[in-house]
Image 1 (tube, rainbow, N blue to C red):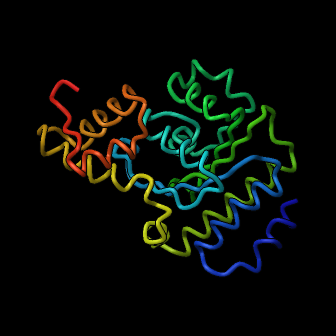
Image 2: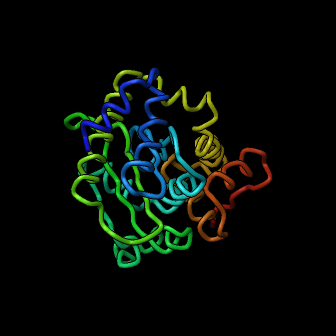
Length: 228
């Protein structure tokens, strides 16, 4: 399985193309419904995440959900440096009380997250999800680990991958959130971390995506009050 996947990756030129191809191969070769690769940097509390590529809209919405509620398999995989394998998400509501029900509502039944790292240096996460419950088979798990390693190499080869994703429009998912965090920091005279917590809380309470709340703040259609 691993040898076949690496062969299929061999003809791809350009690191962003490799990222796309890795996500596509996860779907076609690993019996999952979707895949996405997220670049992360710095403390998770500052919301520094860029979705480099996703095979579908559900992947984007899952990533937005995790940033909104501040929990989920990507967060755990990035923080721990180990794979997070959840064959039945419906049993994990106690573990992720905000993320699990939201993901199930999106039609996701199983999630598998693999950190992209070299030693203690972590760069992001490869996320796989399935619309039906069930574990990855041993060959598929091996393949996922190989593709995660290939994704790590792609990021190492191109330090501008995150910036490139933004320029291609694929990193737009959370760009407004970063701007909005700065706005709220100044408006409410709070720290960046506190500003992001307030934005997350508003998005969750009003059933909006984090990015939508960010866009409204940046367009000055929404001004958070001190008590929100």
